[in-house]
Length: 114
Image (tube, rainbow, N blue to C red):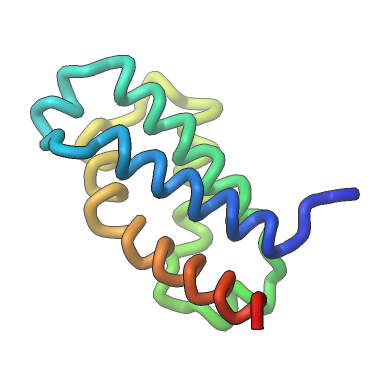
């Protein structure tokens, strides 16, 4: 049986929480200097993006604050053009885009559990 919408949302949320855990207390300089940390975060971002890509279209339309197309494009870059990944862009995503996605995932999971 393929993953449900709720499964995908849980994958998004769990991956974001893991990113937060890995980065706890770390700033951009530590992140930038630590290759293993960056690789782990990039893999978790791939999971986030892939799970988001497979959400139903009506969910994406109902959540215009999320840049769905850009997320898919970023995941493709991580997979296929990894050598061009800019650490500043990854950090920007972590700092400025993941909190909104986390809130959406939490809210949708809550609503599904009613």
